[in-house]
Length: 230
Image (cartoon, rainbow, N blue to C red; front, side):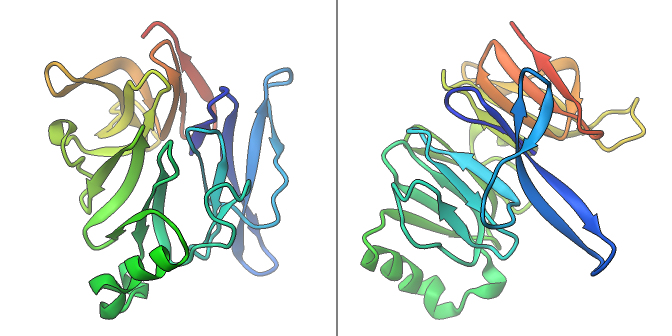
Protein backbone atom coordinates (compact mmCIF):
# COMPACT_ATOMS: atom_id res chain seq x y z
CA UNK A 1 0.00 0.00 0.00
CA UNK A 2 0.95 3.66 -0.39
CA UNK A 3 -0.53 6.56 1.56
CA UNK A 4 0.00 10.30 1.47
CA UNK A 5 -0.11 12.73 4.37
CA UNK A 6 -1.77 16.13 4.11
CA UNK A 7 1.59 17.74 3.40
CA UNK A 8 2.32 15.28 0.59
CA UNK A 9 4.74 12.90 2.35
CA UNK A 10 4.47 9.31 1.08
CA UNK A 11 4.34 6.25 3.33
CA UNK A 12 4.25 2.52 2.62
CA UNK A 13 4.23 -0.79 4.49
CA UNK A 14 7.10 -3.22 3.91
CA UNK A 15 6.77 -6.92 4.70
CA UNK A 16 9.93 -8.85 5.57
CA UNK A 17 9.92 -12.63 5.89
CA UNK A 18 11.64 -14.07 8.97
CA UNK A 19 12.86 -17.65 8.34
CA UNK A 20 13.49 -18.14 12.06
CA UNK A 21 9.82 -18.26 12.98
CA UNK A 22 8.44 -18.48 9.41
CA UNK A 23 6.48 -15.28 9.75
CA UNK A 24 6.23 -11.88 8.10
CA UNK A 25 7.17 -8.71 9.96
CA UNK A 26 5.73 -5.42 8.86
CA UNK A 27 7.31 -1.97 9.08
CA UNK A 28 6.20 1.56 8.23
CA UNK A 29 8.46 3.48 5.85
CA UNK A 30 8.46 7.02 4.49
CA UNK A 31 9.88 8.14 1.18
CA UNK A 32 13.05 10.23 1.25
CA UNK A 33 12.54 12.35 -1.86
CA UNK A 34 16.23 13.29 -2.01
CA UNK A 35 17.44 9.71 -2.29
CA UNK A 36 14.17 8.20 -3.59
CA UNK A 37 14.56 5.51 -0.91
CA UNK A 38 12.02 4.18 1.58
CA UNK A 39 13.33 4.85 5.11
CA UNK A 40 12.16 3.17 8.30
CA UNK A 41 9.65 5.29 10.18
CA UNK A 42 10.04 4.59 13.87
CA UNK A 43 6.99 3.15 15.62
CA UNK A 44 6.83 0.86 18.62
CA UNK A 45 4.49 -1.62 16.92
CA UNK A 46 4.39 -3.56 13.70
CA UNK A 47 2.26 -1.64 11.20
CA UNK A 48 0.02 -3.08 8.51
CA UNK A 49 -1.89 0.12 7.71
CA UNK A 50 -1.50 3.87 8.16
CA UNK A 51 -3.92 6.73 7.57
CA UNK A 52 -3.81 10.47 8.12
CA UNK A 53 -6.64 12.66 9.36
CA UNK A 54 -7.65 16.07 8.08
CA UNK A 55 -5.38 17.62 10.70
CA UNK A 56 -2.51 15.30 9.75
CA UNK A 57 -2.64 13.09 12.82
CA UNK A 58 -1.14 9.67 12.01
CA UNK A 59 -3.15 6.58 12.93
CA UNK A 60 -1.70 3.11 12.44
CA UNK A 61 -3.02 -0.43 12.67
CA UNK A 62 -0.93 -3.37 13.89
CA UNK A 63 -1.23 -6.99 12.78
CA UNK A 64 -3.41 -7.81 15.78
CA UNK A 65 -6.22 -5.47 14.76
CA UNK A 66 -5.37 -2.61 17.15
CA UNK A 67 -5.30 1.01 15.98
CA UNK A 68 -3.17 3.73 17.58
CA UNK A 69 -3.45 7.51 17.45
CA UNK A 70 0.19 8.61 17.56
CA UNK A 71 -0.74 12.18 18.42
CA UNK A 72 -3.38 11.15 21.01
CA UNK A 73 -5.52 13.82 19.38
CA UNK A 74 -8.60 11.64 18.93
CA UNK A 75 -8.05 8.70 21.31
CA UNK A 76 -5.31 7.96 23.83
CA UNK A 77 -5.62 4.19 24.24
CA UNK A 78 -5.75 1.64 21.37
CA UNK A 79 -9.01 0.44 19.85
CA UNK A 80 -9.03 -3.31 19.21
CA UNK A 81 -10.68 -5.86 16.91
CA UNK A 82 -10.49 -3.45 13.95
CA UNK A 83 -10.84 -4.61 10.35
CA UNK A 84 -10.51 -1.15 8.78
CA UNK A 85 -10.90 2.45 9.90
CA UNK A 86 -11.21 6.08 8.89
CA UNK A 87 -11.20 9.38 10.78
CA UNK A 88 -12.96 12.53 9.54
CA UNK A 89 -11.63 16.06 9.73
CA UNK A 90 -13.53 16.69 12.98
CA UNK A 91 -12.27 13.44 14.52
CA UNK A 92 -15.37 11.29 14.03
CA UNK A 93 -14.29 7.64 13.81
CA UNK A 94 -15.65 5.25 11.20
CA UNK A 95 -14.69 1.79 12.43
CA UNK A 96 -15.19 -1.57 10.72
CA UNK A 97 -14.85 -4.28 13.35
CA UNK A 98 -13.82 -7.86 12.61
CA UNK A 99 -17.12 -9.76 12.74
CA UNK A 100 -15.41 -13.01 13.74
CA UNK A 101 -14.14 -11.38 16.93
CA UNK A 102 -17.34 -9.58 17.89
CA UNK A 103 -20.17 -10.96 20.02
CA UNK A 104 -23.84 -10.53 19.18
CA UNK A 105 -24.18 -8.24 22.20
CA UNK A 106 -21.43 -6.01 20.82
CA UNK A 107 -23.10 -6.00 17.42
CA UNK A 108 -26.41 -4.99 18.97
CA UNK A 109 -25.16 -1.77 20.46
CA UNK A 110 -22.56 -2.90 22.97
CA UNK A 111 -19.60 -1.62 20.98
CA UNK A 112 -21.21 1.72 20.24
CA UNK A 113 -22.01 2.17 23.92
CA UNK A 114 -18.44 1.26 24.92
CA UNK A 115 -16.96 3.79 22.51
CA UNK A 116 -19.38 6.47 23.65
CA UNK A 117 -18.38 5.77 27.27
CA UNK A 118 -14.80 6.52 26.26
CA UNK A 119 -15.94 9.88 24.94
CA UNK A 120 -15.42 8.88 21.31
CA UNK A 121 -17.61 9.95 18.41
CA UNK A 122 -17.84 6.83 16.29
CA UNK A 123 -19.93 5.04 13.69
CA UNK A 124 -19.64 1.27 13.88
CA UNK A 125 -19.67 -1.20 10.97
CA UNK A 126 -18.83 -4.90 10.70
CA UNK A 127 -16.69 -6.88 8.27
CA UNK A 128 -19.48 -9.27 7.31
CA UNK A 129 -21.15 -6.27 5.63
CA UNK A 130 -18.29 -3.93 4.71
CA UNK A 131 -14.71 -4.59 3.61
CA UNK A 132 -13.13 -1.10 3.61
CA UNK A 133 -13.75 2.52 4.59
CA UNK A 134 -12.24 5.87 3.57
CA UNK A 135 -13.33 9.38 4.50
CA UNK A 136 -13.80 12.59 2.51
CA UNK A 137 -14.29 15.52 4.87
CA UNK A 138 -17.05 14.30 7.17
CA UNK A 139 -18.33 11.65 4.73
CA UNK A 140 -17.59 7.93 4.93
CA UNK A 141 -16.96 6.02 1.71
CA UNK A 142 -17.57 2.28 2.12
CA UNK A 143 -17.30 -0.92 0.12
CA UNK A 144 -19.40 -4.03 0.58
CA UNK A 145 -17.88 -7.48 1.08
CA UNK A 146 -17.43 -7.84 -2.69
CA UNK A 147 -15.30 -4.63 -2.77
CA UNK A 148 -18.05 -2.68 -4.54
CA UNK A 149 -18.42 0.94 -3.50
CA UNK A 150 -21.71 1.90 -1.90
CA UNK A 151 -22.63 4.81 -4.14
CA UNK A 152 -20.06 6.46 -6.39
CA UNK A 153 -21.15 4.34 -9.33
CA UNK A 154 -20.94 1.13 -7.27
CA UNK A 155 -17.54 0.42 -8.83
CA UNK A 156 -15.39 -2.46 -7.64
CA UNK A 157 -12.16 -1.08 -6.11
CA UNK A 158 -9.12 -2.60 -4.45
CA UNK A 159 -7.83 0.73 -3.13
CA UNK A 160 -9.00 4.33 -3.02
CA UNK A 161 -7.49 7.72 -2.23
CA UNK A 162 -9.22 10.99 -1.41
CA UNK A 163 -7.15 13.98 -2.53
CA UNK A 164 -7.08 17.29 -0.66
CA UNK A 165 -9.13 18.80 -3.50
CA UNK A 166 -11.79 16.09 -2.82
CA UNK A 167 -11.18 14.26 -6.09
CA UNK A 168 -11.41 10.47 -5.79
CA UNK A 169 -8.86 8.08 -7.25
CA UNK A 170 -9.11 4.31 -7.17
CA UNK A 171 -7.36 1.16 -8.25
CA UNK A 172 -10.27 -0.83 -9.61
CA UNK A 173 -10.73 -4.58 -10.02
CA UNK A 174 -9.73 -4.77 -13.71
CA UNK A 175 -6.49 -6.71 -14.15
CA UNK A 176 -3.70 -5.49 -16.40
CA UNK A 177 -3.83 -7.98 -19.31
CA UNK A 178 -0.24 -7.21 -20.31
CA UNK A 179 1.43 -7.80 -16.94
CA UNK A 180 2.74 -11.01 -15.42
CA UNK A 181 1.85 -9.52 -12.04
CA UNK A 182 -1.53 -8.96 -10.46
CA UNK A 183 -2.08 -5.24 -11.02
CA UNK A 184 -5.27 -3.23 -11.42
CA UNK A 185 -6.29 -0.15 -13.40
CA UNK A 186 -6.24 3.40 -12.07
CA UNK A 187 -9.46 5.39 -12.39
CA UNK A 188 -10.84 8.74 -11.22
CA UNK A 189 -14.42 9.47 -10.22
CA UNK A 190 -16.56 11.69 -12.46
CA UNK A 191 -19.32 13.10 -10.20
CA UNK A 192 -21.29 14.54 -13.12
CA UNK A 193 -21.72 11.10 -14.68
CA UNK A 194 -21.54 9.13 -11.41
CA UNK A 195 -18.97 6.96 -13.14
CA UNK A 196 -15.22 6.34 -13.24
CA UNK A 197 -12.83 7.51 -15.95
CA UNK A 198 -10.03 5.03 -16.62
CA UNK A 199 -6.46 6.35 -16.75
CA UNK A 200 -4.95 4.73 -19.82
CA UNK A 201 -1.87 2.61 -19.17
CA UNK A 202 -1.93 3.19 -15.40
CA UNK A 203 -1.96 -0.01 -13.34
CA UNK A 204 -0.86 -0.92 -9.82
CA UNK A 205 -1.86 -2.14 -6.38
CA UNK A 206 -2.33 1.07 -4.43
CA UNK A 207 -2.92 4.77 -5.10
CA UNK A 208 -2.12 7.95 -3.16
CA UNK A 209 -3.43 11.28 -4.45
CA UNK A 210 -2.43 14.69 -3.12
CA UNK A 211 -4.52 16.49 -5.74
CA UNK A 212 -5.95 15.86 -9.19
CA UNK A 213 -2.55 16.83 -10.60
CA UNK A 214 -0.41 14.72 -8.27
CA UNK A 215 -1.31 11.05 -8.21
CA UNK A 216 1.09 8.23 -7.32
CA UNK A 217 0.53 4.52 -7.99
CA UNK A 218 2.52 1.72 -6.37
CA UNK A 219 3.00 -1.25 -8.71
CA UNK A 220 3.47 -4.95 -7.94
CA UNK A 221 7.28 -4.74 -7.74
CA UNK A 222 7.29 -1.78 -5.37
CA UNK A 223 7.88 0.98 -7.92
CA UNK A 224 6.14 4.34 -7.74
CA UNK A 225 4.69 5.90 -10.87
CA UNK A 226 3.50 9.51 -10.91
CA UNK A 227 0.58 10.74 -12.95
CA UNK A 228 0.46 14.52 -13.21
CA UNK A 229 -2.16 16.62 -15.00
CA UNK A 230 -4.03 13.37 -15.50
